[in-house]
Image (cartoon, rainbow, N blue to C red; front, side, top):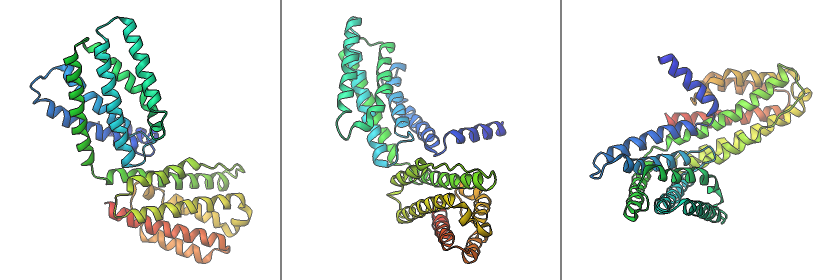
Length: 327
């Protein structure tokens, strides 16, 4: 049984490369348990009321942890906007359900038009992707009854508001170090792309060069989750050095014959392969690998390669400091 869970988790990691999905599942379960515990003491407990107390908030948590969310401000604002949009939709559908099908169609169009209009304003365009899930969740109101009753619509809106406040407070209590893993994962992916490109050129002797700027952008943008950390300057410095190393290695790709004299790039590739597991597991590198960098730095015949090793040395120093501070 343990091996099944381990295998499933590893497969999930291949799809959730940056870790947003794993954090989303953890936080959603946490919020779900908290809301369910509060709902036990609800004097007007019912399955219908439970739906509006738990499901919208849990869905908002999932939306607030999508892969394009890169800061706590963006996470919190996405959660709030999702809850407000959904509350408006649920309230409207509860009232409109009293009337005929045409009334539902008119309200559906009006809600869609209103959400599209709101998200067309500057500052709200980033929330346009929330419209489909909000619309579906609001439309489910029709299936749970309470048609056309104003007091029912008010109760549902109040339930969602209370659940939203509780969830928001719980969201602020989550340790920020969990979100730091997004930066560690994105930094590891940049180094992995460099290693894969070196493997393509050195081992497979390919002449094709593939640049993956998306991973660099993700690494830099994920710094938003580290802004409240005491180690933020270290995170920022490490990102800058990895960025520099990425484009320094890209220069070496384009001048392979020049920079691979005496196996310089081959040595760099072997070092990245040897340290792969440390970067993947987000743990500090042993001293022996740092010493190897110093050795290669002084024996490299080319100043550009020496600079590349120097940048890598600075990366390992920052990486080790961050790993030691995070564990």
